[in-house]
Image 1 (cartoon, rainbow, N blue to C red):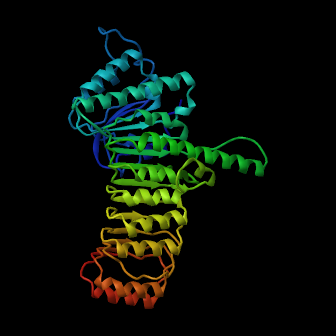
Image 2 (cartoon, rainbow, N blue to C red; image 1 turned 90 degrees about the horizontal axis):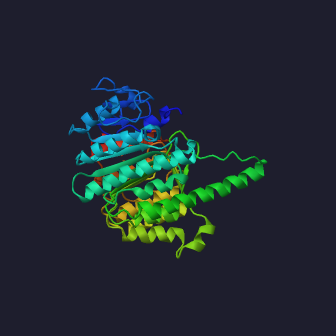
Image 3 (cartoon, rainbow, N blue to C red; image 1 turned 45 degrees about the vertical axis):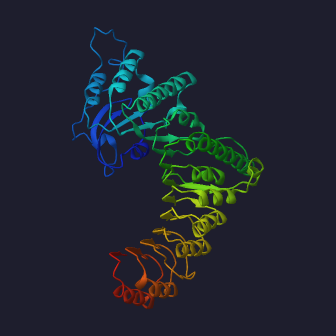
Length: 437
């Protein structure tokens, strides 16, 4: 069994610098992980420990014999209060002996870090046979059950859990999430069918497979994620190297929007879509479900769709909810989503009516000069990498002097000298903008 590839290790990087324990099938690492590093393994210059987890140190040992070096290291490291992140892969969960595993759980139970982050690399789970998969899932569940028990006893709290290499068939892993969880990040990996057949038959098979996959993910979100009472941040992301997008049903999005405590939703690389066949299982049409959920939402601050796809009607529905009722959302990101001018127009109309919306990101789309009437109370706006021309620049120039913009990006558009001069003039009459591109 080979260890995780570089793509997975890239996804396993921590977002901020933090002392971490990495429990992989081939080594134990302690380092200061940061987003600037390409892989976790490269942090060997920061208090780094590395011990092979091979047959020589992965054996059953009586209490009066020496323990494996990796286990002794873990016992030492877990006593250090600065440890805030623990990372596992499935090979480690599979290969550790029963005695060592029992000892490890005891050590983990005694660790009382108040803001631990657990990361699980489950990318290779499907390569194991049924018995080994059962063992891996069983041990992962023990870890998560322990996190729940510690939270109830106020001995510590796992605030964030990250799954890397998730597939739509791995939904049972989310069934064991601690109810006290506040942040969840799930990176999905591509799933492809290798069924034979001619091109037309293969297209039909692919369509059916995508429909089933979307349905599995919808059930996963509705059953396990949307019911976490303390969840405040939820990120569902797709492998950035994949050529397609992760299919997310519109109803699944509505379920997330109905989650009471959720303040951030990030769906990068996702394709939000509706299927007429799904409507028979729901009481209201998909776009209306999203509209009702967002109108009644009083907790969501950030909604990010990026590098994916969203239906025009669904995107316009989101903007309409912001225009009509929602007064909580402060940041909307529709960057690199192939949205048309009509959605951009709806977004700016919402900004004009909505006095809460502060950030709007529409970069990397195909927007043209659709007509700017107001910037509302926007503080940051990104319209870069579109097709705005002089007419749009002239319209913006009339609005910038009285706007509240702090950051403003219109780079990589089709603005000529006339539009450029107009924006330069408007900047001379604005005293809020600190960064422009």
